[in-house]
Image 1 (cartoon, rainbow over the protein chains, first blue to last red):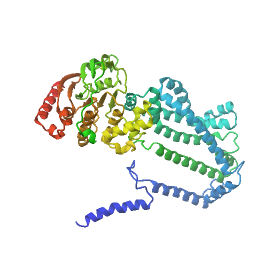
Image 2: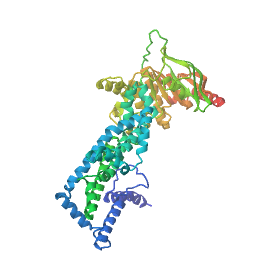
Image 3: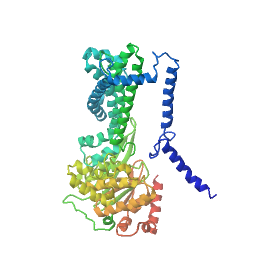
Image 4: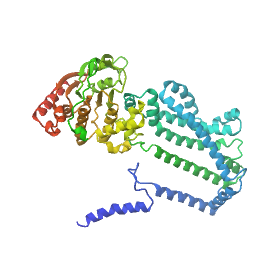
Length: 288
Length: 276
């Protein structure tokens, strides 16, 4: 009997240190789903995929022209950091792509957020913007790419516009949904404290909509990055998408894989960055 | 807190010329629920709230008490009748009528003091002055230590105290409280009842308070109105002394366990059951 309290006290402490040892967050609150982090499982599955790739390429299960070895891809990565592939180095391609995506993103933020908020507030704005947005939103960007090329040419502008359109719809719809997340009581509270209609919009509705807007910005950024390769299919000389397409034309598979990995890792980094910004800007999200 | 616990002299401001208090005359509200189906939420309600009154509306859900409060606050336009505050008709929400909501309705993007001073900010009061006022009101509700805290760190009772402070910061003529203690646990609820009475006593404002708890209603009211549904109307009115006894220094538990309190509580329960 006397040993029971000891073992009961020791068990959680051991579990705690094991979690810490595995690098799991133990300071967090309740976790969704089954509970506990999936970090370990995810790490193992990622490593397993890389190992499978390594074995498959070294055992020549697949010819190198289709599947180069991981080493070859890494070597290519280091090479293109210093030597140009095509017009510019990897850094040059990356900057060109980032510039396109971020220009489109900024343009979308200054237009889609006001449009979405207007749609959330005003019946008239909803009536005006609903049909075009709901029509083009499900279209694949490649479907309207030819039209954009006819209208805006094959320069930088048409690339930015294609990405912009991909970001605009989800961002506008998030801002619109955000407006609706303000509660009737909050609006009544503001009015009974003497807030005018415009004060209610700027001091209550905009703030209440912020969590949804930030989520929309993150999702929009994802869509924009997804559209990148399509945008760079047309007469680009630099950009990650262009680099991958160009390499695939010449069956330079290590550059294709390297480019895909770089695109994916940047997308992941942007997503994590946006989540960090969300946590910093709306710490109250989901808590009140 | 200490200032509020003293049964201080009430500062009743007599309005110049116009008849004081709040008058509700033949107030009716009809809702359209179907194509040609209507519900009479309020039916010819008449009520006068005097300068030093704490009026509690008691009734089961659906008796129209929240509808009545919405009309007083100006959120809802009555179908017929009128509401006069110090002789002036009520049309729409306004700073002269502060509302404490059941689900606090605070702004989570603002900290405690910015929530409490929101109304003053809307009125264009400069930051130094509005913080000064808000701090004083937070002290009144015992939250001055939490002025800089984010509101999502506060408990349910504390949230309602912020709600009370932000109403007081606007210096309204009447505090409208829509079941503000409904979501609180029993212990927090009792201490909040006492706090609200202390604040009412210290500030000398009119109060209109909604509840479905008989004991709460009886303890807090100077005038208790019992409402009944279909159509929503006032079926009984009581003048009670319990809240005045509390602010005069009698302990809350002693009041709530006194024979006259218990007798009246049972009487009201019978009235409510009879009108269901």
